[in-house]
Length: 357
Image (tube, rainbow, N blue to C red; front, side, top):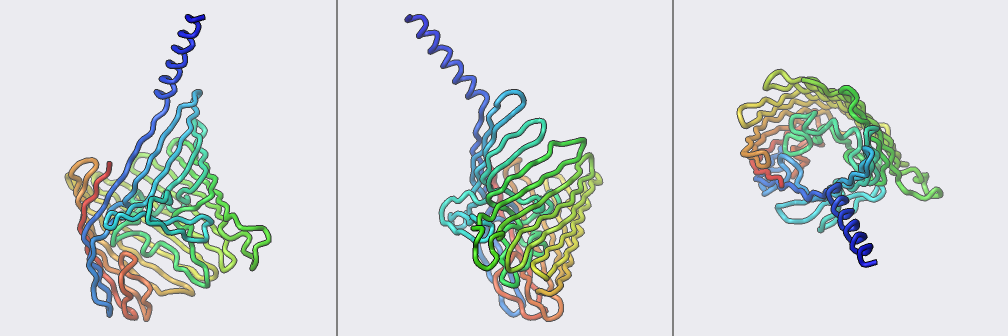
């Protein structure tokens, strides 16, 4: 009887060790902080110690468990951090509201899923498929800093609609295709979690459906994506197409995007490059925006340089200028401090340090 007990204990110990060997959890993060100066026509200038000039600061944990037979379980929790003040970011619980926080809120990503040779299923708060065409893989600056894509590729809120799903969606069910000879894809459906008898026809508010189909092989990368979110005050649709091709150290990049909010529309075109020079990379982007029924036409150019001190640490500097057309004054560099005068311009300069861990 004693022997049986010892054998049982030994088996339990070995099973626990095997289980631990098949699972892993990684704590990760990134801090990005620098000096920023923004100027706008008729509004003077503002200087600040600012975060996220190159990459979004974050803190999180992710992990996988091997379930056998090629099946894996995974989780991902990621919170925004503002290192200049130490506060956390905000999130949206219904894809309609905005929930602020001074602590860690896992609003950047909060998912659990299963993956295998058939692809991956995810549940939770995640990036909408169309956002992936605005990242640094498809735009020279991605969505950070004074040259960021979001300046002219994000929606302009109007008609009572405040869009919450141009980057992420909560309450989502998503499927990511496995790589199929270079072809890849993603589909997402998210719930707004409104009551079926909600007043004012808002029962569908916050519902989102989106997809992305892409190809990446050798020097070529291209993708088409679209997503629609229901709002009683005016539905929001984001559609974009991105492509880039690498010629040795240079990558030529093109991005087209359209945002419809209710009956209004903005359409943007960007041509840019990322050029590798030794341990650094020169970045340039020129964007033209045309507006219909909202805001105003505008153009933007941005020039930047990233110098990698190691795989995890880099210095960077960027300069950008936005010019509003006609009597418009909608757009300000970096999302801005101050509003330019009618038809005015806005410029921004930043220099900073990024470190990942």
